[in-house]
Length: 259
Image (cartoon, rainbow, N blue to C red; front, side, top):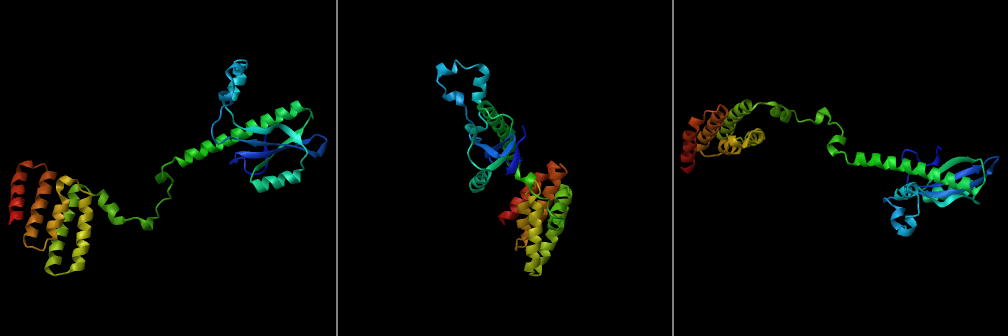
């Protein structure tokens, strides 16, 4: 059976639908039922008395364990016009599905058609919810739109591609700029230089003590220039793995800070 959606979308069923079918040979006679897919998984077998459940064939008990779409009433009934059913679907925001024509008017056929249609509708709904859940669980970063090239921070990208040696070399140049700004009382240049130095220092491993180097470089006292030079020398010694020279530099830094 293939459901034809007169209202709604087969790719995104609402989980509740009015089903209609027409009598073969007389399209003016409309049969209908209502189908609902429980939003919470439901097992009818759980509510069956043990004595009654023991009398059911295994296949029927298995079907009762996994309820998808339920027709209410359980068979297609007559008595309502198509226009009235369309109005109900619109007001209630239900899907409206055409099941086709009934080749036979007996209750068994109407019961079977309602059951088959409800099962198909339930499968469509389950597939839709499963897909929606996968999309919802996707990390936000994977769903975000590409960043326009104009919005990219080119300075940040450039710094991230630099090896540590080049970053330290840039810091050395900026130390000279910072001392020049201090000597010329150029506060705007000093702020910009400090910003750039802090940006580079943040990308370096903590062992290089970049933040202390920056603080020394912008220190207004005369010893700031010497401290910055010592911190920079220490960083390069670490980079080159010349560890024997580091204790002497550490002592010089400690002595200078205590002055």
